[in-house]
Image 1: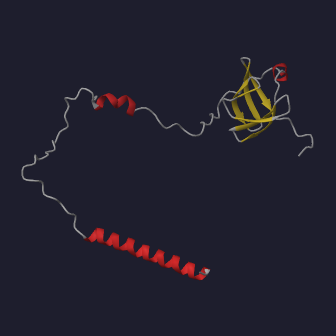
Image 2 (image 1 turned 135 degrees about the vertical axis):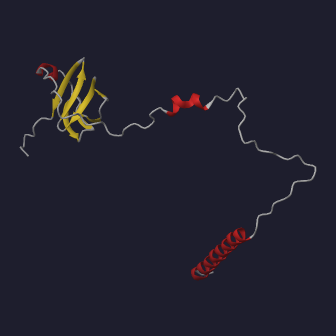
Image 3 (image 1 turned 90 degrees about the vertical axis):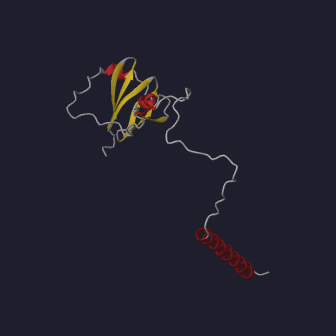
Amino acid sequence: MTARQTNLLLYSLAATAGLAALACVTFAFLSPPAVAAPPTGAPRLVRSATLPTSNPSIPPLASFESIWSLPLRKPLAVAAAPTTTTPAPEVAPSAAANLPITLVGTIGTSTALVQSATGSIEVRSVGEMTAGARIIAIRPSQIDLDFNGQRITLTKPKDPSGS
């Protein structure tokens, strides 16, 4: 059997299956549904207009109000700080000199690249720990750290090439 004959056979089978599916859908829409009448001696099911409230295992709907009012969606972005904030207190250079990390750079206000004492570069976000310091805030070319109870601001060093 050649490739042409195989393709012809497969196309013919696909067309036949498509026509059969179309016939089934057409038949389903055009034929009325069969409804069987209940036997003459069978009990009839009657639906009540109200739900039974005497079941003690089901709590009333009012008890779920505290759950419905929970804020399930949290904002995805951290709210921007107001422009009229007081600047962070300057930290003595000796506290920043004790840090075993340096700031390599920042990506917007969400990610900081820090270099550890071993020379490896780590990617960190607000709230993460690096070398015993917790990152509090990230700004372009600056990060604020909480190190041994002190707030330290690291600034990216100037590029020596001047570019």
